[in-house]
Length: 91
Length: 248
Image (cartoon, rainbow over all chains, first blue to last red):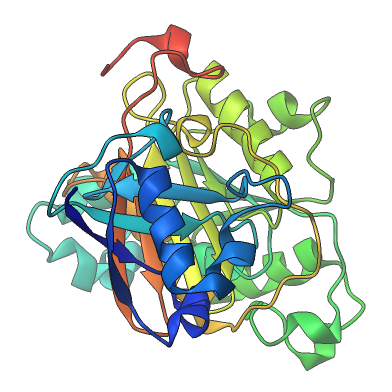
């Protein structure tokens, strides 16, 4: 199981001890996010709905590339960097 | 043909390598829609008018409110209560009387969007909600009109340029996801940054210089002053543009 870096958006960092990049372990994006939540339980409400699915307004990239359509099921490997991006609609 | 006055007004940008009088002529001939005349529409319309885009059509249905003034820099205290498109048109005409500014006071809907953009070359997305952005994305694809996306929240911003049939569209990035429409926090400098990026993309596209912000969503984090990119591929199964071919 590799070491994956997750880069958090600014507004989520307060839920992770003001950390910008968190190192986690996992073979998929879903496993990595679960490890992130294990390290920082406050992240759970930022990422997942009550039913446990990733919030719709969150999109994830692996090494800068969109993880769609696999999203949580997408495999990751040692050294990969995940970026959590939230969709905004203001103007 | 550029007039002596235009040659002087645009002298500094005509000096840019690859721009020249030809580039300025192209800007003069261009017809651009600015959909929304708020936080994003203010800077994008100001800089496109200043740059000499020949015709700008501004579409907005709102009136100026005091709470708009922290970011919607086209409007001043004296404009409170006035129609946004009226006030915007006046300001832009005073900024540059050599460009044509047209105001349309309407809400963009599925029923009127096609008519509103007909005959125009480019669309700037300066909306404040995702559903209308998807509507504009759809009509831009149908009518083969380049579409310049921008959005903001707090100190954050997003931007992407969409060339129908060639690059990923808004639907390829967001997959039609709707987020609740509610009053959103925003500091004026966020739409200022994103609106200027949209205007820069429009100018580059018209003049034909530089590289466009295509197949990548630009992510602006103003709090940490960082720009990053979210690379996107044109989705062959995209509900909106999948049938248009292009890169796969």
